[in-house]
Length: 113
Length: 123
Image 1 (tube, rainbow over the protein chains, first blue to last red):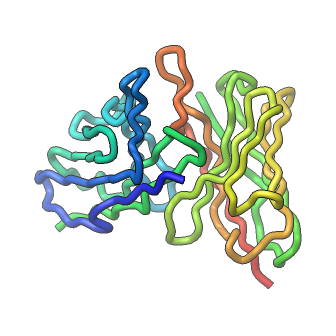
Image 2: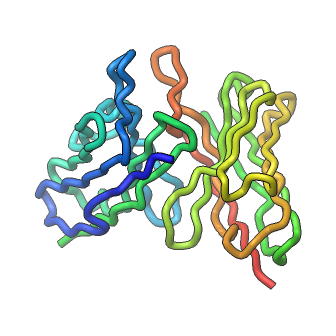
């Protein structure tokens, strides 16, 4: 199984500042035949299901604000929130869909400083 | 709009069984593989099982293999999870989730998710 490890486990950032969450996979999730990284990011607020933010590592889902961006390739990935808003307080998860079983990172809790 | 609604959760004793349902609407259910993902209280996300769009192929997480059975009824637009020999560690919110559809292909990330149904295994 591919192990997904996120860092940090929790993060406190001031409103309007940049937040950066990292995700590392135990093996590459880059599929060479199509040059795509099989990596997604989710946001989960309390009492709600996860919400898809990005897939293919950097493709933003429709209606997701452009302050959210995904980057990285191979085994190292980053979710960046360029200017933190109050409504961004949540737990963020990465997920690989390169191979079965699908696996998630342990989550990163984002709070306001 | 696209919607997934789970039901069937509750409190059950260890060793007993429970069947979850997920009613789908707003999309062509029979075109999509469907998944179950669970989340233990205060914990992260764990993929549980997937069934192919026609129902012929099924795959499970090792943690539930041999105890859980995923199935579907495309005539009723409904996904099921039969959970047998339940254990305390199966306590979780169970979500059904649909693969994302993008530019003519299915991507194995999940959008949408249902609201989830809570299963508590306790004596």
